[in-house]
Length: 202
Ligand SMILES: Nc1ncnc2c1ncn2[C@@H]1O[C@H](COP(=O)(O)OP(=O)(O)OP(=O)(O)O)[C@@H](O)[C@H]1O
Ligand SMILES: [Mg+2]
Image (cartoon, rainbow, N blue to C red; front, side, top):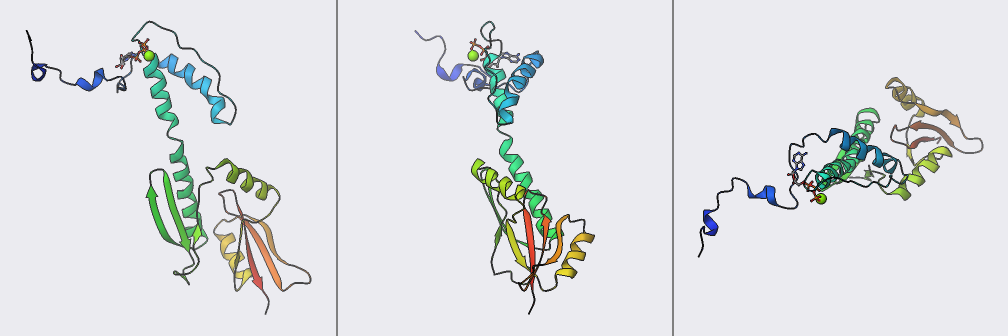
């Protein structure tokens, strides 16, 4: 004989009995959370996190503590978004490009800028360097002083003065390359790249 039917059970919120449930309020676990975060820190800097054993009587929040910490670790891709936001600001407000495509799919953002004079022309992609290989390549180029991109300008002196007034840091002032028709200058794009501007003498 059934005492209660399935639709007669009076839970206000059945979800909190789900194995996946993570409580919104987590009491008295501040110091344990700090310990777990401390053990994880080396992992955030490319080293191995510390091995950790969580001990305690059943149902006192061991699994919950780990879930909550890893929910924070998931925030990382958002940092990429911010970097792209920062790149967009520099490439539009300082360098004078115009935003073209801005499509977000999950954590990925396809972001491009174009020259204001040729808005249907070549697009420059502002990509996050989330891929470790891309990051290593970017850092090596930067260290070796090799520009990641080069843009032609009509009047390098004028552009140099304009950008300098906007606070742009140049690693090379306009310099005539002997034996060539090129005068070049190199600037730091504040996103980890060197950018060359080039004027060709006609
Ligand atoms: N400190 C706490 N504050 C709020 N809720 C808690 C706390 N500790 C446990 N709970 C609640 O109890 C439930 C069981 O917790 P959890 O699964 O994290 O325990 P556990 O220590 O991993 O247990 P077990 O040893 O059985 O694996 C959680 O879903 C959560 O709702
Ligand atoms: Mg558990």
